Length: 403
Ligand SMILES: *[C@@H]1O[C@H](CO)[C@@H](O)[C@H](O)[C@H]1NC(C)=O
Ligand SMILES: *[C@@H]1O[C@H](CO)[C@@H](O)[C@H](O)[C@H]1NC(C)=O
Ligand SMILES: *[C@@H]1O[C@H](CO)[C@@H](O)[C@H](O)[C@H]1NC(C)=O
Ligand SMILES: *[C@@H]1O[C@H](CO)[C@@H](O)[C@H](O)[C@H]1NC(C)=O
Ligand SMILES: *[C@@H]1O[C@H](CO)[C@@H](O)[C@H](O)[C@H]1NC(C)=O
Ligand SMILES: *[C@@H]1O[C@H](CO)[C@@H](O)[C@H](O)[C@H]1NC(C)=O
Image (cartoon, rainbow, N blue to C red; front, side):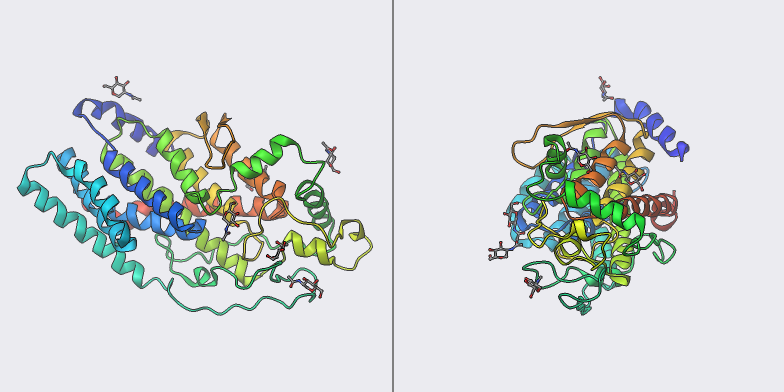
């Protein structure tokens, strides 16, 4: 684990003189984030799209080629995937590509285009067979049925995206060994403690939640006009990446980051749909009928944030944060301090002394937001980190070209 981080630093020092630039990777990342914002794409689906773009870029790069050639190979690969996924954005995508290939002689440019498009076609073709397109019917428990079972929350008419649980992971051969602990049993002391916490701190009109806690919930909400919480961690990767990183280093970082997010999401959704459990709004507005929780029943209770339209346990937000945190800690060191902004209007940047502090805030944000029990965010972040460790160790074996 340490070896990768050291090697990374070493390479940055060595190659600074060759006018290395990660521009081709950053550009594709920004274009993907823009598309996610424009379409209000949900975080897990965004991870899938980000991972396809960046895996194609990673695979397009020919090891040992000149940096300018590698940059063009990656630029063409990103452009090809993005144009297949979001064809109506062609004018923006063409405009972003143009400066990235402008300095290359025509013959090299033609070869780079072929390498980029071939990699894009391979990645997209493989993705068509992963099962993500399948129709997987899901019917939640009826309104008012047994305590603990997932039910539609107010105004919800469908549940997203049950087929993720049956989608083939991008890097791992299976997520079957990655299982969070189940939801706490209704009536157990752990359940009651979590219920009491979200009841008080997560309600829309809470007088208990501090302004800073409200800000944390909104800061990491990353709702439908943003690049999603998966995109928020891509923004963090951009912040931490040296402007002197080589295109290869940048390609590896974004490919691994987004593959880890996506495989972690598959593990999280597999658990969500294997044991669909109720959201705080259902637990609190309906109650479980016991005396111990009677104080936490309130039919008018509403959460600060909108409740996502899928089962509660484990938290998808925290799985994404845990996976991202593990990858970023691996590349940059766990104790890297940073300051990062948010797309939520009007909130200032926040400073963090370590990557784990940001993961902790994401955990807290879902409880302060009233959409998760504490147990689900802890299990989500832990699950995301374990999947990411496996992705880090398997990624090179699966995708390394001969070198
Ligand atoms: C569940 O049923 C109750 C009582 O009939 C009703 O007030 C509530 O709106 C229903 N909830 C949902 C999510 O449909
Ligand atoms: C459900 O939708 C109705 C009509 O748009 C709205 O008045 C109500 O506030 C919504 N309920 C919740 C809990 O969001
Ligand atoms: C919020 O509620 C918790 C649990 O009831 C309590 O320990 C804490 O002191 C309260 N905080 C504020 C600021 O009211
Ligand atoms: C999108 O986000 C806005 C702002 O948070 C919210 O008002 C709106 O209801 C959301 N739309 C959907 C479809 O979730
Ligand atoms: C990038 O390289 C330039 C030129 O070698 C150097 O001055 C600068 O400090 C480097 N920046 C970082 C963040 O390493
Ligand atoms: C977030 O989850 C991780 C992994 O379980 C855990 O170590 C951490 O304490 C959690 N943070 C918070 C604030 O809940």
